[in-house]
Length: 283
Image 1 (cartoon, one colour):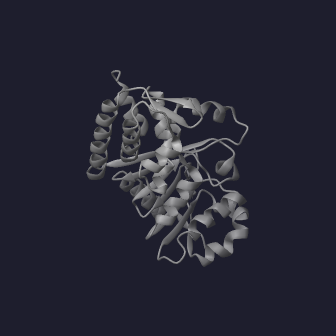
Image 2 (spheres, rainbow, N blue to C red):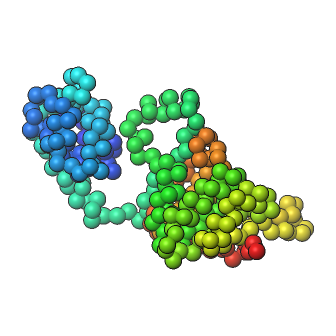
Image 3 (cartoon, rainbow, N blue to C red):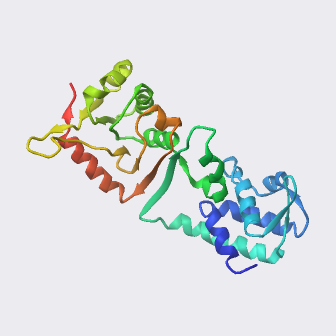
């Protein structure tokens, strides 16, 4: 194979080398005979959650010149079978390494894409298979909430009625568990109207409402507040980004952020704890 081919392929499929290794083995055993995607799926011995990765793996192999698509859903190897078998062994080694080695931090880019039709959505796929590694804001928020077992904190400067329902939906995912639920707002009086229809649910879920909007006399700007958007779950994972609790951030405007897991979440925890300390309790 050409120099750099394997390195490029690893970059494209790095989240799941074990699944890629199984697909590569099937194509190696097929030699230079064309095989269908359905045959590859049956032969690769992948679970249902892994089988959805096959199209991306095949497209990645094609992108680096390992295989060609001879017809809709039919693939043939363009490199020697022994080279593919050697690659499969490397992928197995990479999968083992992934299981025993964990980086200090894990970071995933999280997006809300613009409402269709969108010029950005038209050109983004041209960036290649990297798109499959992107998270979706609403899904990531739900994951953080669902996996919280001790504390869920939502920090949002701006909120509307749709955002209020979004927040309640996240807190409901912790219902039935002994989870401390905290909502930090930028200005409760400005947000109060948006929260009116969900006030009963917030009370039922025992959500602590805090207002971080402090008056400061003698300053150029006579108040202290925030513009950060954060969601913190159990001090083990956190979202940091641009998404407000607004209808536009849910499904209309481009929002970008990151989901962080690992040691750096403790830094976010310390920030959130400090915000809780200085915020005013909403009665």
